[in-house]
Image (cartoon, rainbow, N blue to C red; front, side):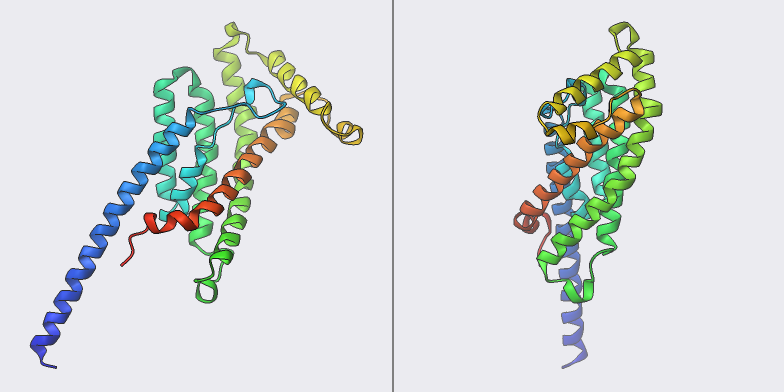
Length: 247
């Protein structure tokens, strides 16, 4: 093969690689925009879990953010998380205080999930790269491990920021220490009616906010992360071809 032919092939390969990188970047931007739109829609579809007070409303906007975090890295998940909360606060300004705390909690979770998954913390890239089931198990393990720092942040933020700020700014609306404890107590009483007598005795009375956070808030958040993780595990294999631009 002549040098001329080699140069033609090299230039063609370079042009192909540049086109591939450009198309991959465009696909990523489009997918992140779609996932951000889904997260914004889902954040307004909040609901009350069974047996708990309306004070503990949740949503599953974390799902598209979680998809972005494992598909494109933790920065992509963080960007969508930020956009979601900016829109939610703009539409519902009264939700500023709990939204700021929730943003930090979800951001910690997404960053740790993305970092753990991209670093192959539970996954041997060389041996298991083509085994999708091992990838899913790795993702589940990364998600559960990432929930620990998120729950720790939630405990301290809720105890020392969220409830004190809510009490300070919304005391005229009836939000105070006693009303918060009352909401926790009603929730615990409702749960005790639907569990066995032995389990009911294990649930402590709520005499302080930190107890309520441990008994109610953290299990709800952990349950949300588990459900979101399982849902992403189920659908990711089907949406992966659309998220990644194939050669």
